[in-house]
Image (cartoon, rainbow, N blue to C red; front, top):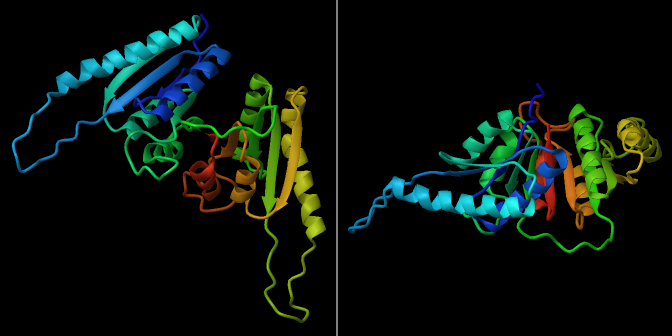
Length: 291
């Protein structure tokens, strides 16, 4: 008896970004022949006020939410007749509930921002928390995508030679093959600054040697994915500068940006590295955090 593949889990809160995430997840689940599980989590927040008010029983909230989920499930089944769709309405903090779902999911997909939080932020707290703590890859989808300046879809992937970066590369090539996109692999390094003004103790640094080392690192990192996906077009960008800025510049009109949860640098105790956090907060396309 063959085991069913782990489901694609989409977080939903009725916001435009979460609806975009559901549709992204549905297309991915259909491609992978996996089930789609839509999870809506809500907390009951009790606030006191000086004047008399009306108390809405928790039981009265559930039927309306369930009807909304049923309508969404019906619409998805009409668009994807062969897709197995399951919905769940759970009571609890959305970030915690989705993180727990990640233990049994192939992928978590959620919108960049829900209805809560500060309207000026590109990414809400739920997306940040789930991206930091999930046990599977997480894709964060914005409600609106910038118009592309290119005809062929593009997947950007950050490369730094780490184990997590290798997993991000595999994810990026898999996505690129599925949507007929090209991959743009971005690697950045920073030139050490001079520690002394003059004299023999001045730091010596050959930028050409650094660029050649970067080229070899990227070539070795991409070799396996290129062999596994011979039909995927791949472009390499080597940039002397900060990694997050380099990735964001390349991703300005991309369809998807893929980064590892943590790279080589930074503190080992961090669950989400500075580069992945920066990309997550500033990219205007869907962002995949792979671990």
